[in-house]
Image: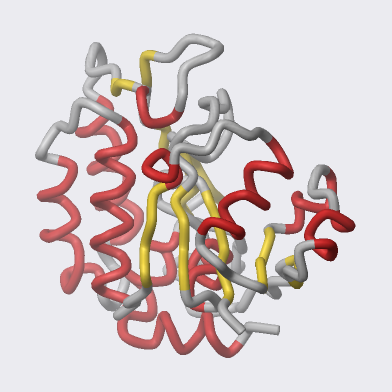
Length: 228
């Protein structure tokens, strides 16, 4: 049975994103969907000394702009803000020095498109977590269908028979259509692990760098241990 999962290339993804990736043989980045304002495509959270904070990449995007076409807005010095926030809150993390300089170089590249930035960050994270999967990009599949039909078409084109969806898929996926095409549809049930953070108490659902800076090489073991 060949398993696939699909997800938008978001900014500094959370742990559940990586659980979906390692649960699949094939993984598709959904880059030709509409940009979602106030979503996770251009922002995510980090743990701070007094709670949590959003790191947001400012963008230039209209209501119908596709994610792959969204440009980064450099009218403010957001790069310096993100770097300072990460350093301030993670410099005392056990494995911060192991990863930061390489990640910092990605920020310093000043990519034109949000997709470029997100993909470079994700590639860096895949490398550090030792994730090796067959990776595809939805825009290269040239699918015009929307919603549930789009997901089903991707599964059919890639000839897979098991699809792992995020929990939000229950709101729009047409389960009977997947059954008709003999594709097993499963919904992710990620149980968030508790691990060592720089500050107490523990805050879940942070960007993956929170786990990486705090746990280093143990990061993947922690994610896998919580897979259902």
